[in-house]
Amino acid sequence: MGEALARVLVVDDNEVIRQLIAVNLQLEGFEVHQAVDGEDCLARVGDIRPDVITLDVMMPRLDGWVTAARLREDAATRGMRVLLITARAQEDDIRRGQEIGVDAYLTKPFDPTELIRLVRDLARRDRAGSAG
Image (cartoon, rainbow, N blue to C red; front, top):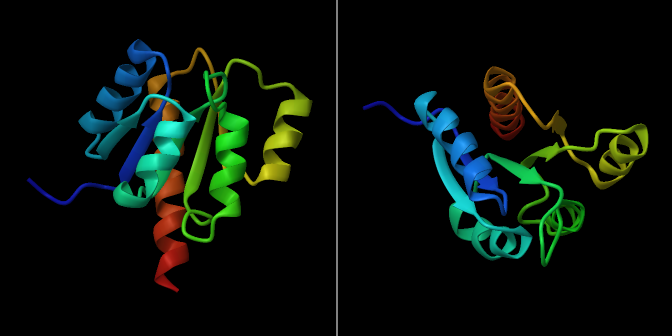
């Protein structure tokens, strides 16, 4: 088996959604890790060192907004690509994400092919950015 396209951390408190995202990405050749919420993400991100993080917004304990902001505040995780997955993609949400530094959005319900396209694009950006 060849090298994985990229390492992805899937963060969602809903196990069904988390598994749906994980399976679709694994079938495309990504190395996938999972976290159940924002706190779990922040605790594991240093060991996993993902290229891309898919991050649900509405989660208990630590929501996606706060998690994304903390990822951007830490020099060790600042460059990791963040795909925010949300049921709410109003202008205010998009503006808030831009202020935090979110790289892309995906609105629920989503098409798995769009998920794969976005993750692939973000992983390419990461590799291009780290190559030079």
